[in-house]
Image 1 (cartoon, rainbow, N blue to C red):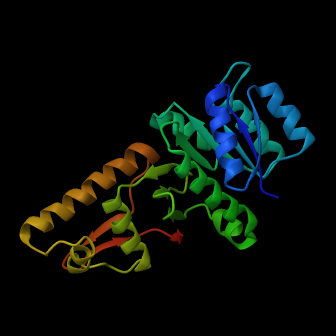
Image 2: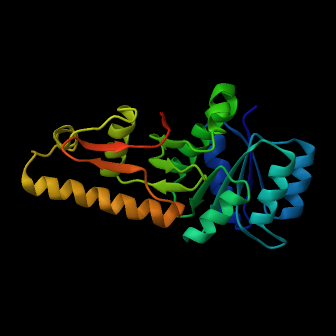
Length: 232
């Protein structure tokens, strides 16, 4: 079953999402209110709900809680609210993924495809439940923290985190990282690499409200010091 329920009160955006995802092979239904969501859900439970927060007759956060209490379906919050506190509240309400509305249709589709794979893979779902594990989603360029906060990565940040995770906790040398980022390993590029790490640590702290498990090991490079896995 790959049915998707789009819950969005803005008609043009709802229509765009429904038409695009249908064109990409999904069975999609669009509704605009909390009441319609409940009716559609009771009629035919979906695999994934794409949920707006600001509905005319209810809060999307409350609806996510309500859905999660009765279903293991995937929940993607799609909203204009992009502050860290909003993201955290979304994950605490039971959302699997939190996207802001400037996300492209292609990015939304990639997110849906990735979540659908996770939902259909029992082993993946079991791994997802490990409370202290980080997840790097290479298709959506997202790093997902253990508290389910999502950090959108730049191309450089994605390459850096991917390199660390492929080392499975072992250090990745500055030379390897410089080569990976297509830069000669000079003193200037050492400073550049440190700047990338510092920005990434701040971003993770801002979005996930926890410290980044990126450790500098003197004379050996950088390592990711927490359990993690990569999802293509």
